Length: 257
Image 1 (cartoon, rainbow, N blue to C red):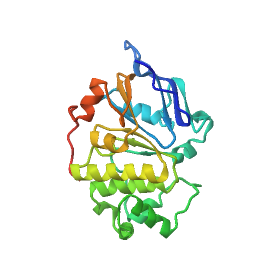
Image 2: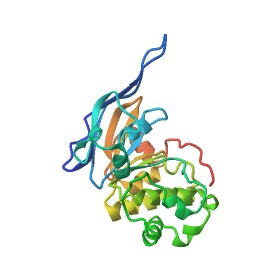
Image 3: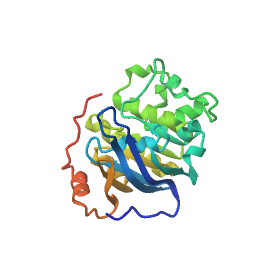
Image 4: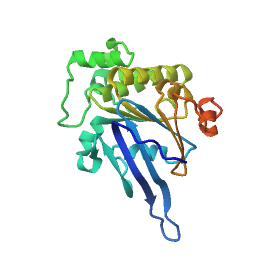
């Protein structure tokens, strides 16, 4: 296949990225990523799709150095990410995981959790505004986080990421543990945030609805290699990507919040 096109103002530049795990005694090395190259325009979206075990989440984690590749390079905002402080990189390219991670205590307390030395506005008004940004009532600030629904918890984790003023959100299956109504709410939230703040979004998902709302590029991975790249906001010709957008690709079972 042809390589994904070079972009005018990329926020992420992935160049010939590979990751191989050394095999143990009597076992051959295992290739996780194989010569992956792709760029993501500032303010655009890229969705990583493909069968389970294809390297999607690993590629996502390479973008903020939670996983280190064995070959290749990632640039963020024009700089090799190895030259950036990892904490600063992870603030600017914030990861939202599949299962919301909230701590004991109030929503307010959870929003105030941040690495030592993190700058930013964490005033009461800013905390309330962050909840509004993700479609939640500011009155939830003093609610026990354990009483929230699954969809509410996921949107609180997105609000917490927003408080760091990121340039990008990295979303790893952000809706897979939610029921359909909450899938729609989270997908709508992410889409609106991208438009409002010109956030760059890189997402791993099995949910066609999230892809339709975000638009942007679709990267199809199998066994760590790129087999197809097309724009989701255009006419998709690749049969695998077309089947995915049509909902023909099986999604993992959902769990109610």
